[in-house]
Image (cartoon, rainbow, N blue to C red; front, side):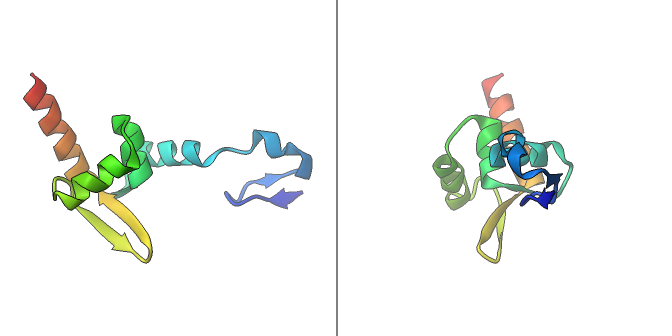
Length: 89
């Protein structure tokens, strides 16, 4: 047995069933944490990461930097999405 980068114990030959990074990001969106990743936000809106960074630079969503990682404040992102929905109605 070995431990993969998720901390899950697996047999060495079971690498084909190892969860992908994209699945991990989607699971983070389902969690009710305060912060979400740029990739998770992009997946939720079905846009590119570049588009999410543009929203950050245009100050349409708030984010913080933790070390080298950029995280989006969930409330800010949810407010932005709610505004999109209200604007469409």
